[in-house]
Length: 124
Ligand SMILES: [Zn+2]
Image (cartoon, rainbow, N blue to C red; front, side, top):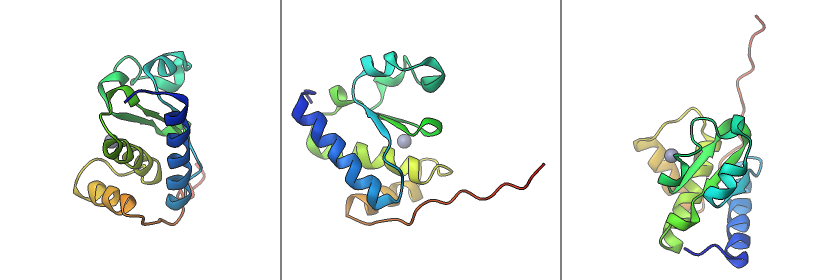
């Protein structure tokens, strides 16, 4: 898809809506490989020059998502990618698989999730 101001705005809107539904703080969103490369290396470490290969990348430690608009062919894939990346933020311990996909489907169909609570760490 072509990233213009209108599309950028609509992506930010969707990210905002889904973040609220998923009980997560709204992440910062970048939408081009240029923006990924402009980020500090410590943020994008490990998925920097490879980011262009994916439809989206989430940088969990930094509450940041990359939506690779250029690589996304249509509106449906865009929505899928946004929800996919936000599910990573909401369920950081979960890797790809059946449960992950099921949560993506629920998210796409309008389901909300309670905020994620980190387990309190014991001292030492
Ligand atoms: Zn993923």
